[in-house]
Image (cartoon, rainbow over all chains, first blue to last red; front, side):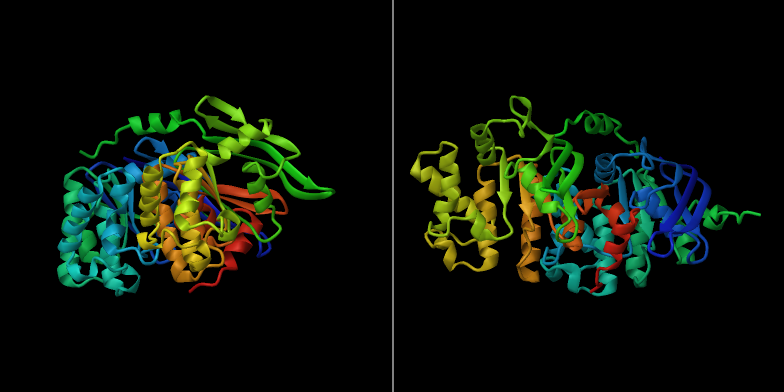
Length: 227
Length: 269
């Protein structure tokens, strides 16, 4: 479902003397349907960089990233938009929303974008918010004023609203209490059971051990310094 | 479960552009307005154009919308009768297109509204321009559209002069969208509005784009606005397009030195 081959990435900082910083080389990785693969490696080793390249907001220097039949490294913007709409979900650590939009609509939006009728989309959103213990009195408010943990749960509800065949999870259990952490782990296990391919970053080791079938150390993808 | 329906790629690849811009240039004497701009816009896509003052983004928008004649280049629009170059179209035809298939939302609502005509009249006028004649129907449609842009029905007979800036901008949007255009040009639609009013307008525009399947080209200097509204982004400097791509890719991993400077210059709140 997610197939990464010979992927390389460098950043060119034009305004700092055009410094070229190679950050990744020869990255190879695959995630099968129903499988969860955890990325490990110290902070700055390139876990998030790799996730962003799969999501398509970081450009690859070379190599391929095939998700659901589309090579993200070569794709046109509108193909990536379709990929994100139908195939690939992303739970990031940050919630980025239009201010003043009610939480219920924020969660329902991925479904509305797929053409799911409003009532049905909001019913699914309500179900997820209830399951993630967001009090119903908050559903009509914008999540921008919520606590970090609440925003994280809104983000998770949004990421799980549509049954994406592939999912990227960036620290989905960070800043959650034990009860909600359990709900999120159950959601991940259910997604795996229905065949979703999941690539994730989990600093929470117990969570990683429970949901990940394998781990990949991104330090293997650190470019070798030329001799 | 888990398998991807590969027919989505066939559908995406079969899409034909709604607007295809090829080699568009406009000079003001020896000074460059915009130079050699080419891009395709597909149905349902929102394209953001960013750049600082004088970068040529407004010149480009004016050329695309037929307000300004480009020196060279083609602007091919997929009309109901097939693709047509709107640059070489006769003026009458272009004007007809401007009130049916196209809409233009000005930064200043006073440029897009008739200030001496009631709110309902502003919306109804556009309907009458495309042939609506039944007063009851026109008024009912106007009331419906005022509701969609969150203007209370009891303000229908008030003139836009009596409205706040945010309400005027929403009225301008209603006036433009009532005839269900397929392509909307917007010049800094949230410029000059309070941030709280901006947010409401952004949400409204997003909903309308989704429900009506609109394509839109939005010129702005506000990177936060394009991040929330635009699927794709074009960065202009000195009349040239220096970078284009998926909006979050251009903002998160800018490749051109100017885009890197632009993105790193934004104050974080």
